[in-house]
Every structure is written in C-alpha cells, then in structure tokens.
Amino acid sequence: MKKPGYGRFLAGFFLFCWAVLSLPLGAQQRRQDPWWHTLELGKRYYRSGSYGSALRSFEDARNSRKNFYAKLERDLINLLSIHEVRRLGDDLSLVEVYIEKEFRVDAAAALRELYYRVPKESLHNSARQALAGLGRFKTYPEAEYWIGEVYRVEGETGIALGQYQKAYDERALLESPGFETEILYKIAGLRRMRGEYTEMVFALEEILKTDTLWSQESFNRTNMMRSLEANGINRFLLLFRHNSPAVERAHRLLGMYYYAYGRHNRAAEHLLFASLIQNTLIIEILKQDRYDYGFTGLEKLAEEAGRKRDLVSFIEDTEYFRTLYYLANSLHAGGRGGAAREIWTFLRDYGPGEWRGRSANQLRNPELDRIPEITGAPP
Image 1 (cartoon, rainbow, N blue to C red):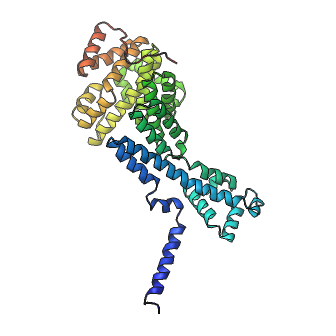
Image 2 (cartoon, helix red, strand yellow; image 1 turned 180 degrees about the horizontal axis):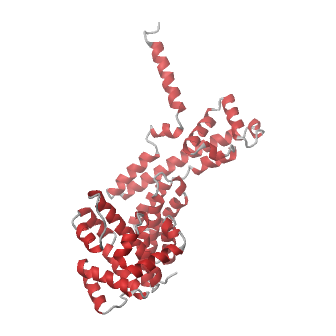
Image 3 (spheres, helix red, strand yellow; image 1 turned 45 degrees about the horizontal axis):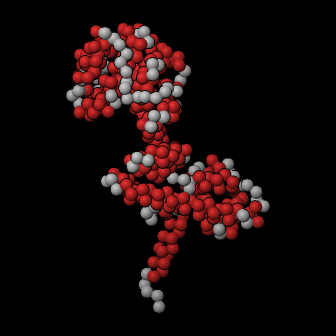
C-alpha cells in the first residue's frame, strides 16, 4: 500500500530530473565541482606559494574540461556515423529531427551543450561545424595560462612562454574579456627578460592593435606631435584625451625601447601616447571627486594628485615622471627643444628627486642619457 503523498513525491522527483536534464551540460557540470572550481583552487594554491599543488590543480582542470568535451565529441561522432544519419548529409536540422525521433540522449546532450556555448545560427545549419565546435572546447586557455604562471615563477621561462602562447592562440575561448591583453604582457615581459627583443616588440604591437587612436592613419599622430611642438605640453593636454589604460604600458615599454636604440621620433610618439593616457586617467579620477574639475596645467595636476593616495600609487606604478623625462629627451633629440624644455622645467620644479635632478641638468646642458637596463639589437 502506497504511503500518502507518494504520488506527489514521485511527480516532483520526475519534474526535478526533467529540469536538470533540460539544462545545458555545462550548467549541470557546474553543479558538480567542474573544471572552473578546480582552476580556482589552483589559484589559491598559487597565491599561497604552493606551486606543486597549484600545478596539479591547473592540470586537473585542463584535463577535466578536455575529457568532458571529448566525450561529447565522441557521442556526436557516433551519431553522425550511423548509416541513416550519413544519408542526411550536412543538414544539422535533419540530424536534430533524427535525434529527437530516435531518442538519442547522448547526442542531444552534446548539441545542448554546444548551443549553450555558441549561437546556434553561427553553425550555419552544418553538422560538420557543430562537431568542430565541440572539438574546440576541449582546450582550456585559462588553465594553460596558469600552468605557464607556475613555470614562470619556477624559472622555466621557455615552458612558460609555450603555455602563454597556447592560451593566446585559443583566446577566442577566454571567459574574461580583455584577458588576452594580460597574456600578451606576460609574453612581452618574458621576452624582454630573455633578451628576445624582436618577439617582445611583436607582442606589444599586438596589444596596440586594440588602441583605435594609435591604429588609425599616422596623420593623427603627426597632428598630435605638431600640436605638442607648437603649443607645449599643457596646451596639448587641454586639447587631447585618451582613456585607454590597457595599452598604456605597451606604449611606455615601446617608447623606452626605441629611445634606447636612438629611434627618437618613434620613441616620442609612444611616450607621448603613454603620458597622454596617464594624464587622462589622473584627470578622470580627480573629476570623480570634483565634478567641476578642469585641467589647467601639469603643475596644478601634480599638486592635486599628490594629495590622493590612490593617485600617488598610480603615478609610481606607471612611472609617470620617468615617462615624461624620456618623452622630453626624445623630443629634444627630434628637434623639438621648446616642448622638451617645458617638460624638463616642470620636472625640475615638481618632480621627485631623481627626475628633478636629471631635468635640472638637462636644462643646463641637454644630453641624451641612456637607458642602461635595455640591451640587445633593435628589430
């Protein structure tokens, strides 16, 4: 004899099962500690200095995802290998009809997961593209990146570079927008450390492809440089803004690199963009505190920024005064002495110790001092 309420329990149980099975497999998997949880565990190990445990977690996360999508791929291959299905050709909609008619649960689950990950219309009703799409998801670029991070801190720079490249090659699958830029910065940093400057420049220039102002015709850069030369740095900063923090470091590193090898006009362009981005961000932060804030000159900007702890940290992190100093040197080398002297004067009066002293020397006797930490041959 059935207990009271058994029927309601059974109905509720089947309703629950139906709801779970209706979810994309990715959503079901996330309910069961999937690869992303293992990745986060590895990050905690990494940040605590337990690099062996971190590496095992990152590799487990990579393998877990690979195995998950490999199974889905096999399930769809098995379905597409059936004689009746082969006769349907590449028509994905006909394949779906067959799956539903024959109740092919595994193949249906594979397609549900794929449609969760990519827009169905992007497959162009192609069964072959659906199969290829599932195969792509076997890679896990975030895990490849973090494996590279472990090898980097352990001093295995060659292996780390290979891991970063794997992650970058599969950047279309990254789940964090803009993370490919961070990968390129890591590649550039290791290339620089290894003295592989051609490859360093290539990585940094890849980052600058996202800088729309820089990537436009050189006419814009030429006009900006002419404005700086004619009007000086303060007037220039009144006329131009460039809020693009992701590319600031790439411009700065390339500017220093080109300066070190005597390509002063190219260095000046990059350092001008780096300084413009730095000043734009400082101005925007000051505006958050005072809606009516308006830029009047570097002197006042330096005074106000010096009273805000977050801006002091930002100025240190972005080498604000160093960037201005080598921008002035590059301008002087390119025959733009007036703009250079204005920047040196600001640094002499408002810069910190090293850049104050160097700028005072430049005003007395300009010379192109070197950047000693960069060696090797320019590209």
